[in-house]
Image (cartoon, rainbow, N blue to C red; front, top):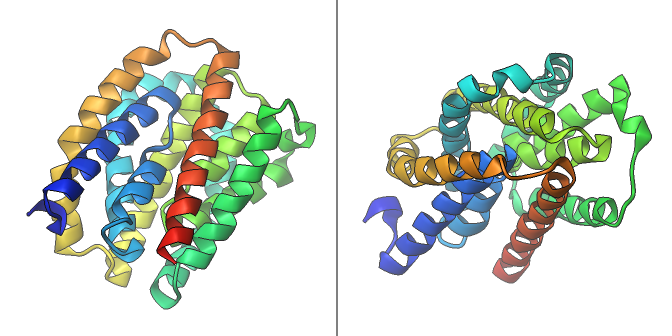
Length: 249
């Protein structure tokens, strides 16, 4: 069976891939987090992370021509620099230790911080260069260890109160760039196996259909509504990931 799953698991996986693609098209992120939350019900995180990152690269490559004009290039360069420095540490953690503790810490922080931002809290200092580099560093580690690069940066951009087109475009292209670097590290470390590549290929059609519908839906969102949807999505994926990790334990 595809993904090594029975039919029930395949239906859940297909739904997660479609929903993840829709979230990616609508907000610029969320695909990997949703895939991780669903597929780690059946497969170990070590096997799922390369699939999640691979599908993020596919989605980002398809979005690139449509989003590049809205990217904040300086912001993109700064967070990417921070992430490049720490992604290898996350990959090393994934190969050496159980990733569940790292996931719990990351998701717990995201859940708390997203709830505070949704309640109206803002962080004016989030626009400083040190804060931007730090956000990239956290994101890089989270990506290497748990395939969750988009969640910390989405939270950071929400804290900066960016305009919707800029936030979505910068986030989507950032995830594409860091995903490409991470796939190279996975290949070097032996995590990018033939099974991972085959499973990623099977998931591409479901992701693309969701991506197209999500991109079309973005036109109907105001900046305030976009920010609220982003924070609600962050809370949802963080809560689902925490529940899966705790109950699995």
